[in-house]
Image (tube, rainbow, N blue to C red; front, side, top):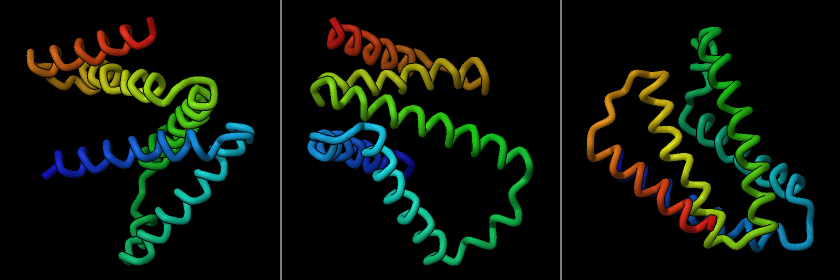
Length: 137
């Protein structure tokens, strides 16, 4: 079931790149990121309240707050750089290079979370890296 959500994520990420490229035309990329973030904020909290899950906030540990906060900072920085790259480059170049994050996540998951990297995962990561290098050059 996880892969269905992952595929949906990929489809919406692709839409994000195309819609953002059109949306940032003629405006500052940081402003565009802030506007996009406002919509994400409204949607995310809307889902939490619609599902009556807001009471779970009281169950969060200090560790939850710390790492979710750090994840938010990393996401924000990623979006800021992504929108700037989209403003300067082509979607067909920026989006695939951005997906280099997949290979970096695999590496970091092995180093920091001690996840096992199988031959299949390693080959997939190497193909992503190779594709990104090809697009950059």
